[in-house]
Image 1: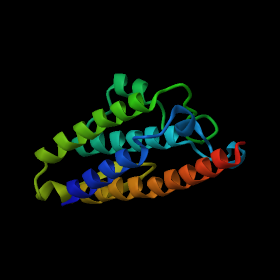
Image 2: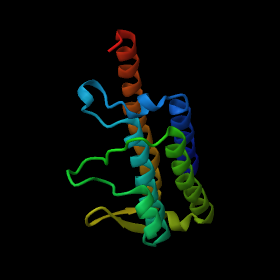
Image 3: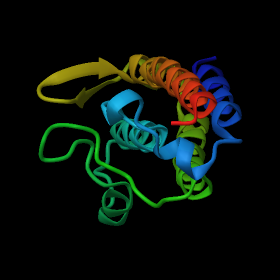
Image 4: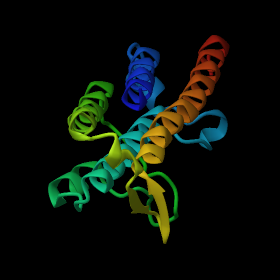
Length: 159
């Protein structure tokens, strides 16, 4: 059931963004003060990747750390993304989602109650972590919907 919640939200996200142009995925809202859709999708992939390896009880391999980058930049903000196509961003996220699916198929009901460390000195059950992945995805889908609305309004105004 938990996997289904993450899967449904992942699928919904893909359908929301699938027709976005390069200009739209880079759009950062009025006055360029918000995170772009590209940043939000990469952030979701990064958070999910971190949870996958927490669940596995393993460190994230260096090649994946390099590929997905840091969670936050030196200013404690989502890293800027420029010139990366929507196709590539979604392909990268698909790679993470496939890893998640594989991990879920290996989990037992008892393992869902095991606790893992996350962030600074926090702990959560694996069950909570998977629920958090689904909830976090929905949360940022709302941001993407708002960016789409602003982008459409901007296009109509021709500015």
